[in-house]
Structures are given as C-alpha cells and as structure tokens.
Amino acid sequence: MSLTINYEDNLLPEGNYEMVIKSACEDVTKGGTQYISIPMVVRNDIEQKFQNVYLWHQIWRAKSPTKTDQAFGGYLSAQLLRICQAAGIPKGTQFESLQDLLDALKGKPLNVTVYHDEYQNQTSAKLKYSNTTKFPDCKHVFKSVAQELADITEEDDLPFDL
Image 1 (cartoon, rainbow, N blue to C red):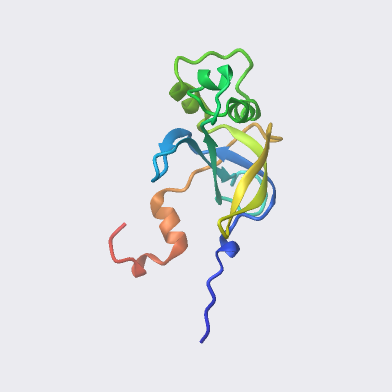
Image 2 (cartoon, rainbow, N blue to C red):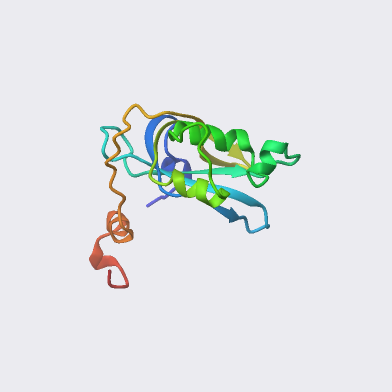
C-alpha cells in the first residue's frame, strides 16, 4: 500500500461562504507576536457545502500604527472595522475596551470570500473579503468537542471516555 500526505485536501476551498464568528480574542504567536484571533465556522443552518468547517482569521498589529490603529490597541484598524461592519455592529457603537468589542463579535454571522495563500511552502485558507450576511437570522448550532471527535473516529476507537 502507498500513502501520500497532502494537507491541501483539508483546506476550505476557495469561494464564498456564510459563516458565523465563534469567538474573537487577543493571542500571541510562539515567537511573541500579538494578534487578534477570529475563528469562524461555515454555518450549518444554511444549505451550503462544508458546513462546520473552520476558518481562522488573524488581525496583526500595525508596524507603523496610525492614530486609529492605536485606538484599537495597535492592530490594523481597517481590517477590524471591516469585520465589525460585515458583522453588523452599528456605526457609532462605543465600547469600553478592545475586549468588549471582540466579545460583541461572538456569534455574529457574515459572508466571506476565502482564498488560498502560500507562505513558506505551506498553503492555507485565508479571508479575502468580509461582507454582510444574506441570512441575518442565524440559527447555527456549534458542535461540542465530543461531537467533533465523534466525526473524526468512532467512540469505541478512542483511548479515553467521552
């Protein structure tokens, strides 16, 4: 038997998807670079392919932050504002902190365009555009960790109890 490993087969294909933001928080790479992590999931309450597949979007700190970037903790404000607009956060909404803004994104639906990007010989799915959803009444049901594990393998095959 011959096996070939091809990680590109696991990528969310390029295209448009109705998604929901699972969460949004500040995070740090192993190298110490801060960023905002926004995991999104292809909605399962809308008829479309690749339901429940994740897309991890990152917003990085600006190398030379503008005054607006500085107001958003030094992160690229244009990117964060595009996500906020697509997620339907009304113009003029005020937040006490960046974390409050990130918390407000949780559970918001949006329409995204995905493309594939290659960096250091690795291909990954990335968010190209974010737009307002065509289906604002979001009834997506997030899978539990147990459900996700069950999709990967049969429960009897796990070396531990769920």
